[in-house]
Length: 194
Image (cartoon, rainbow, N blue to C red; front, side, top):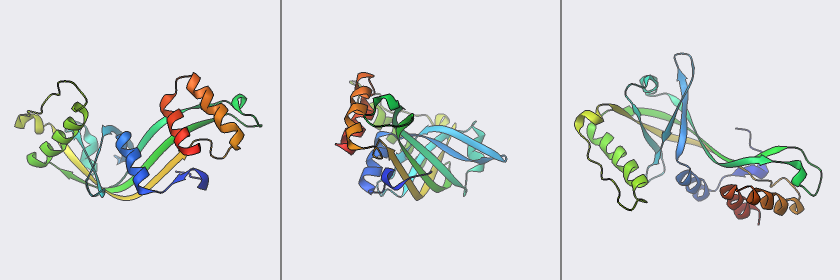
């Protein structure tokens, strides 16, 4: 990913906080000689050295992942920025947050390991509900998926949030995005710029 220095994010706590908040990503690799992507929720291991996910066994993508290097992309809030919002001259652009994770895959099919990943994902996303559903999987259900663990080798994180614009342009852009209801991007810009 092209990352000019003023958009680069290298602080590990910030990167993993962003990943935690935007954990639905795209697993990208070469399969059958062409780029292939699967859209999946991911978990980060407690030691922050691995990503984990699972794919449907019927998704042939997993069959060419073991020991391969992959790219996983994560996207945060984003929106169009009109040059009409600036106090100084500018061009149309897009503000966004993105993270690219490069790593090597290990495919696993052990029922206990699969159950651990599925239970962790379920608990994470059910926890906000008034009456969370509790995992109760039959072995046949676990046989319908395969797990993927990705050893994190490189992180590239970019927050393009108008940092390259004069300070006088920051608040007008934030105000306009706020009017348009782009709340998450407004929060990210306030945190970064103000």
